[in-house]
Image (tube, rainbow over all chains, first blue to last red):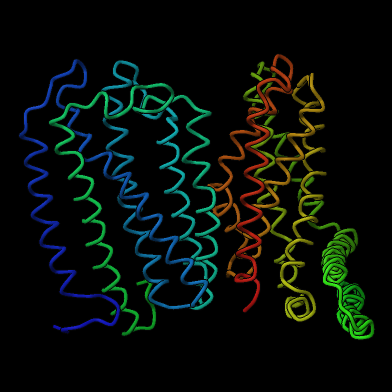
Length: 236
Length: 264
């Protein structure tokens, strides 16, 4: 086992990984076992809060990380920055997909109970779907470019152009479309309607899932770098 | 052969200029920063204009992009009307259908400008003779003019075939114009990216459509407001501001990123 890695501090990685695994295990138990106030219709589905919302925070973080490394690709042309931008996008897309899935299933049995609606163009739902489409396009673009240097540069440019539309998705859309999310559209803010015991689990859950993102992302950057060193191709 | 002959003329006039400026400023002795800046600005606009004219000449010579766009708009509007039949359609749906047709035609036709440079092998010539910013601005202006013209045709065909009634023509034209600026802004950089990729024809729609959502949302609502039964200018302000902001953001980002895409 190699003791050192040119781009990753392995001892820090191992420490963070252990902390995250313990942390998330505690979150899982606390999330399912702690007693929460029962609200009609919501009932136990309120526990979805611990998993659904952190997915969004994590995805937005991943989008930021990916864009940051794309800037670095354009400024320095470094290969590891390209690998980092790609892996942040890949792991972020998984979190986005899980966030979308947990949201859709949950809203079907709470907000839209009795209406048979699966998809209702909630602005945040739309935003997440668009971010996934953007990353889909990013991956397709990468696969269409053969030469590694060109692929790094052009896909970074696309990633940043797409990133420039994020403010519209975050701030403009929610004002133009009706939403049932807390804090939107004159709905009560999140802190007013969430029981203290739930917030006790919720905030650590955000930290835990962002930590999980960091672990998965770092791991994939490592693997990708090894593949790149062995084959000259980091995409595999 | 013929297609290439137009370029060197425009570009030769272009590349001769920097010498002239240097000469003048050396002669006058005391260099005034203001006049130099104005000269540089004039220089810049001349470069943009040269690129725009070159593209326009080439386009008018074989009319490929224009024909593709017009035929696409015509045939897709016809398909839409056949599919709908004689059932009444709400103004929202009409506006949505119009912009779906426009978006897809833009994603097919506007990619042409950079792909054609690659095919003719004239990329190197442009890279050597004209600064990247001017190439981008020239192509952007050309794309805007092209898509605005196509949008007008699409609107006319659409209103004719679907019996759409327009109450506020000014609003509709403004919306079409701002929508065209945003569309061209998003498409120009992407088409420069796509031109570098292999098997690029299908790639542009895939890259473009997810970015266009903020534009589509506003443009459809503003168009709907201009049709019969809509609120007109009232209540369209937010949408128009949104369109201006979208075009501004996308064009700014494109200008910043273009050098990295264009230069090898």
